[in-house]
Amino acid sequence: MQEYDYIQIASLQHYQYCPRQCALMYNEQIWADSYHTKAGDILHEKTHQERIRYEKGVRIETATTVVSHRYGLMGVCDTIEFHPDTILPIEYKVGKSKSIYEVDKVQLCAQVLCLEEMTGQSITQGAIYYNQEKSRSYIEIDEALRSLTVDVLTNVHKLLFNKELPVVEKSKKCALCSLVELCIPDLTNMAVADYWQTMASEVD
Ligand code: SF4
Image (cartoon, rainbow, N blue to C red):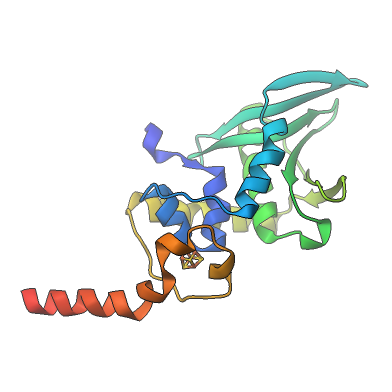
């Protein structure tokens, strides 16, 4: 695989939120911060300092780069605990456990796919740490989650390889999207589609 064939694990959550958001960020290189992205950055300032420490026989790594050549995937694990009998990746999130989103599980599972390939060990569980509650929720890495994760990463590969910029329906998500002022979803729906159709018919 070439370097450009690899996608970022973070791109999976952007794709699940909105394929257009993912394309704007990774195909068009457009980025804007919101309250939520800034809160995440502040939280990850701690976890993204590369460190290794030992506690009660467990090796704990932070900010470890992981990669899967099979899936063309790379990213950074917030924390990985290497127990004598298992490996436990832990993803840090700003919110509360009642808001466990599928996207968070997919992100965790993508880390697991990378770690399994790198270590040759199978991993059945990961964890998400919710900063507001200061607690962990354990997530089973079952076949359904693996299958969903592979579907999502396959779609992201297609989106980025084909340099697509999909037009999507405006939804409630747009109000919380950091790119709303750059995407202008009111315009990108009918108005722009109509404009290009008109332009194309004039050229014909
Ligand atoms: S503003 Fe809406 S359509 Fe545009 S990228 Fe964000 S979520 Fe997607």
